[in-house]
Image 1 (cartoon, rainbow, N blue to C red):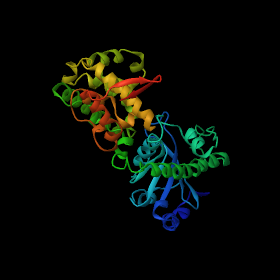
Image 2: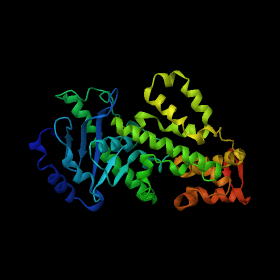
Image 3: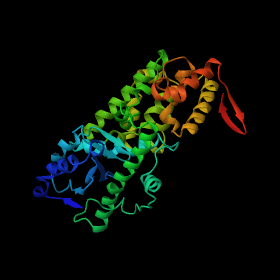
Image 4: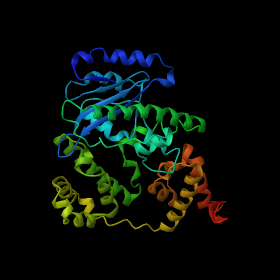
Length: 363
């Protein structure tokens, strides 16, 4: 392990990384990446460490001690794959420090192509692939204080050391199943959690989409003004719930203790009330709820049979679109073969859900 905590140590770092990666075959041209940061009670999360692992070495970069702009050439290089576990926060925080990440892989997301489990933890995925029980006792330690303790450095090193091995085993399994590239075109949006296409497309639903976009733009603008992450202003689930439940939900949460104690949330709700279209929106009433429930049952059967997380195959909105004859993501590509084809057959009356030997099946 090499600690990069001075300009002299960082001078030849990029060349060294390229030398180590260049000595590997194409499929080995990747680095494992993790970060340690503090975000509690701060307007801007404090990036405390960046850990990188090549095949030959592990590097711990100290952003508190040095300017980390020299890392941009590596993270922007699309020839080098950057492997994370639960990439969203790492990528968001790196971007706040001017580091743009291109060509990345998320072991948490790709595990959803190998298991029905959602959002598997790092500890669980390490145990699954490496049979190692790792301790997370230093995850909440004081990463800002210098010098760092030897135990903290060992902890940070293990995270990327195991991540490389997990990725190699996971990628091999995905390759054998023919699933390795299933998410190549959508991983960026998946991790960034851009849900605009998850909202509504008929006349009533366009209004909800408009409101959602207004809320998203206010959150982005406020996050930039306060130099923080959008989710630190308002959580994604609140935005989506407002668009589904309408103005009454805004009134109820605004009058709750949750809003009183959170200045950002209170300001957000005050803004939400100024959107004219929201005043006309009540909770969505789905007249085809029985059909959607039937499709949910079919989705769970397909998810279990293929050992793929159901939310990766189809969202609730996809099922709603199917029920009213609209297009849906699960009607294309690998999702169609796994679920969409069966869903259409069920809706067309050429396939049914039934029970065989106490197990639900599609016939």
